[in-house]
Image 1 (cartoon, rainbow, N blue to C red):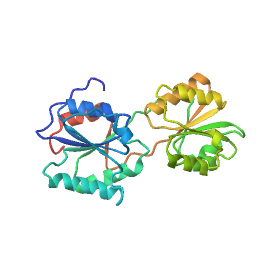
Image 2 (cartoon, helix red, strand yellow; image 1 turned 180 degrees about the vertical axis):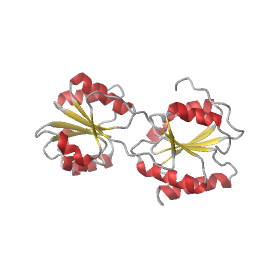
Image 3 (cartoon, rainbow, N blue to C red; image 1 turned 60 degrees about the vertical axis):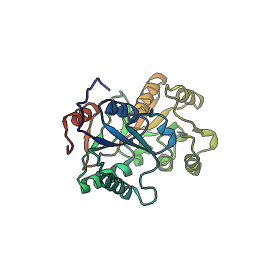
Image 4 (tube, one colour; image 1 turned 120 degrees about the vertical axis):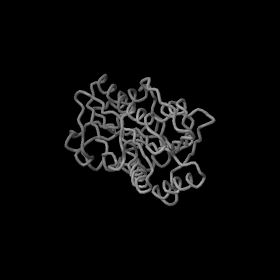
Length: 273
């Protein structure tokens, strides 16, 4: 966390942190150590396991506004916090850069309600030789006929990628969820070219897949996180081409800051930002 020391927050200071398993757990630890009280919203119970117990930390599992949509869910949470007499000093959006729907909902709703919001901005990772794609539609321009392409962009957009580069021989690594597998099979990629596996963390599984399938190129998202960094290393080691799908722009209403600046902003701000 860079050794940043947070100043003591205002008495009763509360933060609503919407995050995952990347930057979320260490950020939560830093905030708790600084004296903040947290509510952490996570999509899955598996993600909640990355957060240790703490008397000033509440974990909420499940999609925000699952039935009425994220905007309604965010609005209801902010209103309920104020009704209880425990309004949030800050809302922090530390979700994945490609989780655009919840980020847009947080930005629009917090702005409408006058709720201070910070967005954690991931760094831009440098990688010599990587090709950045502005959108998936341009993928076909960077693939040769018969080239073995590993798609590591999640299951939701696999169909777009396959359609954009029909000349490539597609393979995919995806999370071991039923919905993800259904989406992947619907693209027409044969089952023997699908790997429903959780990320290994050290890259061993990903390296093995690339060798087993004799992969020529990898497409991953330019997320700025550990997953992208891992693909940079693997492609450099194995001599593979790396294609990066550019991340969406940050919501215009949110103040997006790198980690160190975000922590300093919290430390210097009072109850109303």
